[in-house]
Amino acid sequence: MKPVVFADTIGWLNEAKGRRGVVIAGAHGHEDLCSRRFLKLLSDKAAAAGLPTLLFDYPGCGNAAGDHAAPGQVMAWTASIGAAIDRLKRDCGVEDVILAGFRLGALLAPLAAVGRDDVAGLALLAPPGSGKTYVREITAMSRVIDGALANSAASDATFAEGREAVGFRLSHETLADLSMLDWRRAVAALPPMPTLLIANGQPLAVSEIRDGRTSVESTTIVQFKDYHLLMCDPTANRIPADVVGCWTGWLSDRAVAGAVQRVEPLPGREILEGAHYTEEPIVIGQASSICGVLTRPRVSHAVADPVIFLNSGGVPHVGWARGTVEAARELAAAGVASLRIDLPGIGLSDDAASDRLFLYDSRTRLDVSAAIDWMQRAGFAKVELVGTCSGAFQALHTARADRRVRALTMINPLCFAWNSSYALELTAWKAYEASKANRGSQQQIGPAEGPAMTTKSAWKLSVSDSARRLVRRGLEAVKSTLSATHPSALLGRNRVERWMRELCSRDVRVLMVTSDGDLSLQEIARHFGQDGKRLTSIPGVTRLTLPNADHSLTPRSARRTVVARLIDRRGGKRGGSIGPDAAPAIAPHTELKRKSMALS
Image (cartoon, rainbow, N blue to C red; front, side, top):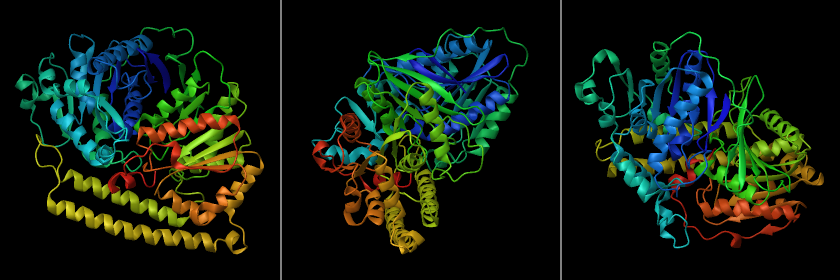
């Protein structure tokens, strides 16, 4: 993929030689995190069929400049689709485009096509029933996952300017503007064109689109099979093969072969400029490329070792609740450069060249070292690695093998040394997430009302959660037994503790961050004793406890506390424990949210 910057946003271009292109307008918030890998695959398939394809982020979202606070967001999002069409035509010389929208993008795409003569087809993937339905869905998710935060006066979830859903914020103005959208009415206002509708929910007839003003031959309507499995979680999601096949076949019939007008590349590097930062989207490697974004201070030179952010589970490089983007820009304001990447098989990057264990394969450290190589060529001799959950695992094992790693921040690590018990737990968790998604898909009470639970279904979910906790306790016992009977433990040496001591003996600083009550505390106790006392005793290790934060650091205050510590530690402080005074009190999350990323 080729990175491009336009209209204060970052895009990823899949080049091809056809005369017709594809622009994909994606989802927002948590739905965006779940679907980035899926949309990347759709982009690959379109390019393979001869259609150059552009993915991009809406203003204030993903890697784009700005945030939720800007006025006129819906209008800006719609305009950015038109800007993406223009950029694709300019870069690839295509004559017209197929415009595809997924979820939020399906609400906006028909509006973006109004008044243009270069949109040759429309693909709407899982469009919400209407803008009002979409806002109700956001509200329901906010109440289920973020609702507990509103009970605390000190919580940043009491977001007076709008609504927060899984850490992503939307202003009241944006919610009101979204509720006015109606994709059916917008499609009916367009000239007849080939249309693909992959619908989630109630089956639709052609007469419900364009008010019967189009022929059956020009409209293809199919069901979005396994939508709930795709969208249940960024790590547990499953790519719906039937949908990919339908997309590929429909596009192949509409590709236009032939030579395009030669286009000269734009001079200079693709740079996104913010108030106090510059960002450059990059691609590392050739055969199995890694996509990422380098953030630098805009005015001054970087004054300390840069940070490389690694993926948390299957969460793309923008981060849970857009936290990695926000952290990178806060670091830049303090004079610290950073690189956020998608490791192979995650987000926008290519799959690994060989079969690997997803998330916890030790060979992934070679990919992290490839990113360190790139940073070294960019002028940074040493780096700090920051990873949450599985990202902490990859950071640890890269630091053990690569002496260019000078510091390490491990956030809520659930595994230090992979073994069969972790594999069993990961399998059990994925099965649970899939079953939870199935239950959710079966609990729709009507297209106008959105998802809901009956008393009976809530009781079943409670029983399921109780059974899952019993299974987890059994798996925790198995992991502890395997750790105790490992040959190194039988010889009186704990290999994880030995790894940590060896790292610190090389003057590598380690910051261990844990959310209060998180499962990572059990993992630390397993290898470093009750309360992790032996970990704290290692010179060079510092601990930071975040009170009432969840596993993924959804509360903004928790993420800012970590960033502040990343900045402060560049003063050279070593050792000791940091208490919870640095983080504001935050009300506990529900059990659903606390476990939703338990094996990311």
